[in-house]
Length: 128
Image (cartoon, rainbow, N blue to C red):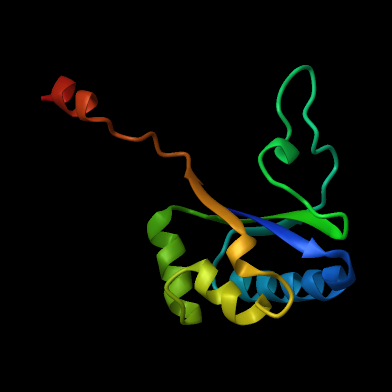
């Protein structure tokens, strides 16, 4: 599996418009083959039991909400196939066109994760 995670800092006054656009984007993505598309609302951002919370890493202003977006694909190739189908190179390019008036894209945090274990140079030598 391959997942794209995006953390959005959304002004509270733009939250409804952002969520509406996110739902529409999710329907487009799912219609083109994305396995899952979810938006998560903040629940606990301060950490627990001595661990750091996301607020230790990301600074939020008083008038902002932190929203987590997740899109799931079969693998990285599937991700690129879906992006090509909707006419964009990657999801950030797509989002920049559709939500740039609602969210400051230079403040969006994004990363990808995969269930495929990485191959390290030492692993390749061991298999030889």
